[in-house]
Image (cartoon, rainbow, N blue to C red):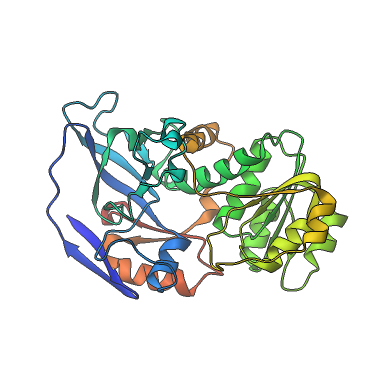
Length: 340
């Protein structure tokens, strides 16, 4: 099979590899779509570490079942599934509660285990989550980032009737606008820096402010603020200060962005005046399956987010494009050549 190997900063190679043998509790999938995530770009640039080199990246994966192990039940050939990439030890208090990302032995397909930047991937049965028959591979590609957003909102509680602000209209932010609406938010405000993404935020039902030219706090407070829940998809000290000023007293700020800065500072006086909770969100746990329900509901418009597609053989070109065209590229996908 064709696979994309990450060899270190700036180094990708497309190679032929034998298909691994299948254990009794495993499932072999034909990878239908695999996404290039912002974390993949950061790793390729040398900004984030990689636990293994060389390795096959790709944790945003949907695929169709090719083969199941002898002990696998409930999955059949041709069935479309999303890969829940994370897992834990299975025995600690966090795993027993389904909170795998808190496990000290946390692992992930695409990091510690071979991921989806290949024509095939093998996963344990519990990591192959069946998608509804109405869900297409293009939609299934977004299962993992939808799960990230759903988990972040879960930390803040119900969104029914809540006001929501989303800082950073990247792919997670644009999904968050839609998930907030699908979960009953009364109003949604978003910020961004690219024209295409700001227009999509508005199309999806948000009031949007251009962080290049607007005072985002002033615009947000004028158009529906303060907000019960603020998702920070930026991850800087300046964004955290904005989140605090946009927050309703007793509200929630959920930090979703990866740690591009190891230390954040914030306006403690304004934070304390509001008694606002600030909580970090790290991917998801058993609530990954919330993405399956959201996809099946048909309430999310994902087609505008899949902006570019490449065959696995063109992965080097795909990564170069994704990393240098952030204004135009929202989600770049790798997929089989016969599906382009």
